Image (cartoon, rainbow, N blue to C red):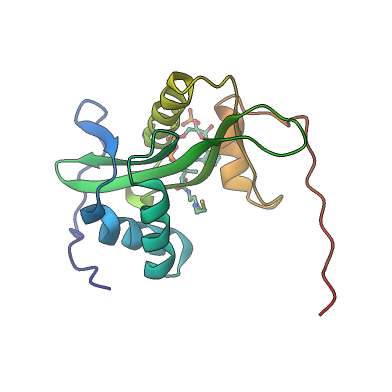
Length: 161
Ligand SMILES: CC(C)(COP(=O)(O)OP(=O)(O)OC[C@H]1O[C@@H](n2cnc3c(N)ncnc32)[C@H](O)[C@@H]1OP(=O)(O)O)[C@@H](O)C(=O)NCCC(=O)NCCS
């Protein structure tokens, strides 16, 4: 995967210059690079699949990117879906990433607000996400945005081989 499109110098995030918009296919390399920067792992096949599912302009699926003067500095992915067991549809956030060079300037909050606005327009009343218990940064981030423990619990069991 070609990642050399990223500029080595990213201007400090300036909210007045930041633009959040739906992702296009041409954003795929930038998102792969940003995710690799955040997770230490390049996952082009995974993100190609996610683009096909979430960036295809279906009305209930959202893949947003934040850019400043052509630099992709962040992204957020989510959809409106009904969980099983009788819960009404709600907005689910599945992934968020902000470049380490652009953090703590409100960009993650901006992406979250933008996807929440789209969830609201889609007619749902709640936004949800699921995190690993030790994902302290993401927990702090979502907690700061008003997210709290919800009414569902996740259960699991290891399957026999
Ligand atoms: C979590 C993340 C999206 C936050 O992005 P950001 O642009 O820095 O967030 P914001 O500037 O909007 O911060 C909002 C609030 O989140 C909290 N927060 C953000 N970074 C924090 C940190 N390092 N430690 C503690 N709290 C933090 C703060 O309460 C902050 O508010 P404040 O600035 O008034 O203190 C970003 O750090 C990130 O992408 N991390 C990696 C995520 C990841 O691993 N993704 C892969 C799996 S999906």
